[in-house]
Amino acid sequence: MSVKQNIVELKTKIPADVTLIAVSKTKPNDMLMEAYEAGQRDFGENYVQELLDKQAVLPADIRWHFIGHLQSNKVKFIVPFVHLIHGVDSVKLLVEINKQAQKINKVLNCLLQVYIAKEESKFGMDFKEVEDLLGSDTFSKLEHVKVMGLMGMATNTSDELVLEKEFRSLSDFAGQLRTRFGIMPNLDLQTISMGMSGDYQLAIACGSNMVRIGSHIFGERIKH
Ligand SMILES: *Cc1c(COP(=O)(O)O)cnc(C)c1O
Image: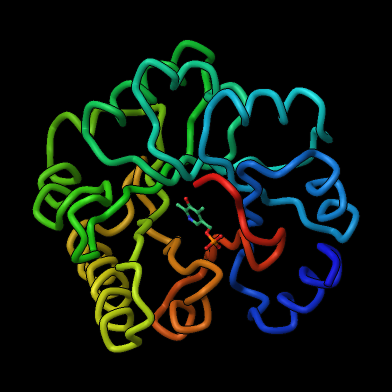
């Protein structure tokens, strides 16, 4: 199937209130354009240099989502145009995003990446780190970021019971945080970014409203 057909088909399976992000890392611009021509506007990238190269030449109304692991020293390159940074996994990174956004008088939307998988290798904060951050003085002073929700990656498994438990743990946690912290000038926990090609339907059933889908749209990736 073509990229276009994949998108059209996916849209029939995803409820209207769930945002589909086309994860285009390692894929060439002509494939992104095929998705764009099918109406897709939200694209996810994992590598800063690749994102910069694509953003420079692709249509200006694309909403770029940074979904990879972001190093603090690269924040300044993407802050001017990025729509949402999903992988905020430390206070240090959030402070740096705030600093760079302040320089250009912008407020940058972010998601906190929360650790839900059993695997050691996945990045993220644990529940307590997130609670401590949101309740901290440091956080209340960050006026140039807005935490719009949580992002999680489940264990790489086909065991639906494990996946469901992990997905539910993230949406339950978001609910607890909403009750505890409510809405603040820099906090409005609306978005739960979870679910990829293999597990997006389960993720949506467990409360996701933003899915990040790569190989199901663009085909398998050779690297990463
Ligand atoms: C690559 C990637 C995806 C997409 O994975 P697929 O299995 O190809 O859909 C989603 N989220 C993150 C964070 C990724 O790095």
